[in-house]
Image: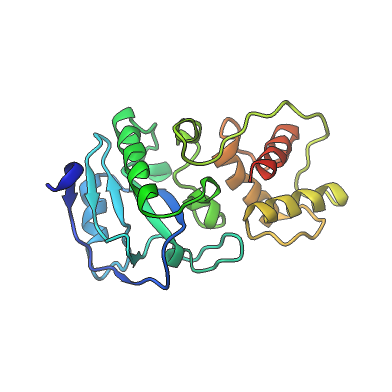
Amino acid sequence: MTEYGVEEAPSPNFDARRGPPDMVVLHYTGMTTGDAALERMRDPEAKVSAHWMIEEDGRLFRLVPEERRAWHAGVSFWKGERDINAVSIGIELVNPGHEFGYRAFPEAQILSLLTLLDEIRTRWSIPNGRILAHSDVAPARKTDPGELFPWATLAAAGHGLWVEPRPSPGEPLGLGEEGTGVFAMQAGLTRLGYDLPPSGGYDEDTATVVCAFQRHWRPSKVDGIADGETRARLVALLRAT
């Protein structure tokens, strides 16, 4: 144990950064136990890691120094950046994930995360709009930390963005739709940060990105359909950034 109750669990899976981090990416471990996740992230053959891991009981493990580039995001994108590992701090939350029995994140785990974010943001300049989900930066591959993650709780504590706009009327947009409404929504998602060049056609890529958006900012219904509430939340977030 070290300062702040941190347990050291060094991983060899890192390399040099090109500059200071300005983003936090949150993950779930997606494995049956925290011990299994810790073992994998410390295995040089696995070539994966994170800077931090938080157990369900709140215990905090440091794997990679924040000054180094951990290997947690994989193929990813946000606001033109394709090397998310180079600009981010990766935090893994122990949770079996959708494959092994996805469940709510315990209060002790979230309290530990909030404390860690407080500390991280005293060391680095990280805007609220760059505290993101793995599914935000890799929507075609990842769903973590998923729709049960309490983003509103984080935002209430000063970390990340959350909006509660008025309900917005309007017909939902979905697969096969075409036109200026689809183009405008795609442009908004692109402006927010997603990799979605506007085409005006609501295709599978658009539905995938809408699902990722909903997992983070409208988790009560994740269906890939851009209904009025989804679009209202997007507009409110753009105004907040």
